[in-house]
Image (tube, rainbow, N blue to C red; front, side):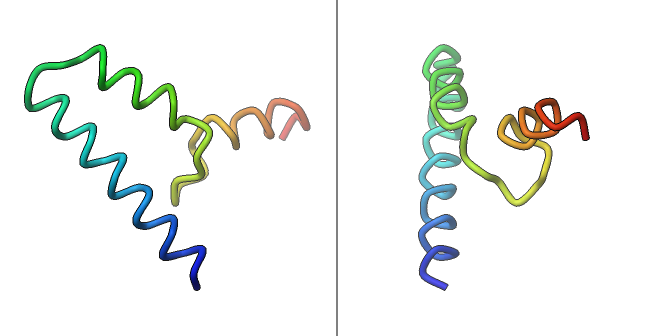
Length: 59
């Protein structure tokens, strides 16, 4: 349960940063946030971690 709460807080922070950067038209900073957090596991299986896993194991 604590991992779920930690993940929700983390994603909330990431999305808040993205929202602020996009609102202020700071696209390079938004891209940096996306690059720095691409390894995180969102609720969807469509992310860079799962894509690499699928590619590695040819799923």
